[in-house]
Length: 119
Image (cartoon, rainbow, N blue to C red; front, side):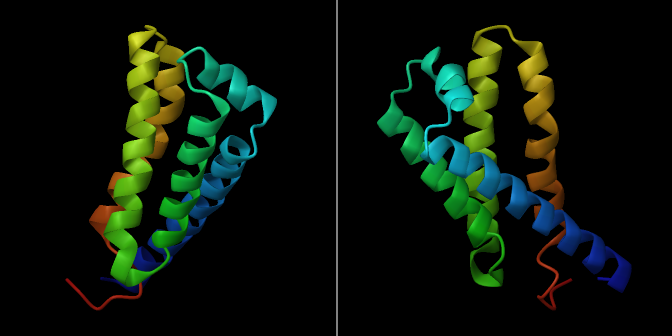
């Protein structure tokens, strides 16, 4: 892969890491806005903490070349769960907010980890 693509993907991975840790911590620690959003889907504090833990885990696993795909899979799965709940509520604004983050995971997978020599 060309150096500019590797740099771009590294920046995308760092952005995904930041967002994953930020949102995951907000869920894990039970921030009021997260509790409000997820409580309408019958998530209790424990289930929200579990989702937050897996969100943070996925974000960290993306950094490691050997667990890169698994980290993206966990991240994308968590986002898909949220998208599904928004669709169930017919909340297209919520879907539109989550969709770029889901697509980000797919782009990162397509570009592959910048520290591997594959391609």
